[in-house]
Image (cartoon, rainbow, N blue to C red):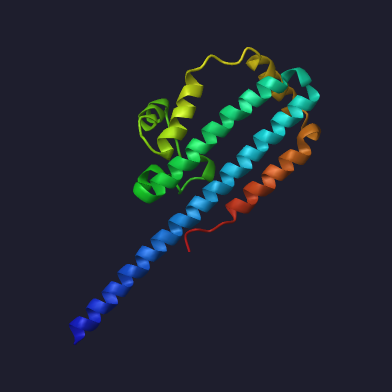
Length: 174
């Protein structure tokens, strides 16, 4: 009887820890999603401000924004995948910005996959292989100008910082 009770207790414990692991992975994925969403919103706001101040850079701003979207969506897909299949690839002990470090070689390998992660990797890999937009330097200079005048970006920067503070408050280790 004691063995049956022990086996039942062990089974319940195993199921509970598996459930906690799944809940933890789900929480970590949501936390990373919040980081991706905050980052994409920041870049969208920054490119909008740039286009408003420098209308001649609207096209290159959209080109830049699409590249950022491709990059961040790859990272989102990779973190989701690795949280489910190989947690060692996600450094959750670091701040959320440093959870995933994909080198060009990693992106190339991922781009050979035939799934959502592979499709996202292909977009990013192709972006990195392309010749930069002809107005890329002007766009970077415009960003530097905007970023060196904090009052011009205060509203969007505050929005980004609030989003980051909210996600940092998420505790997935409970």
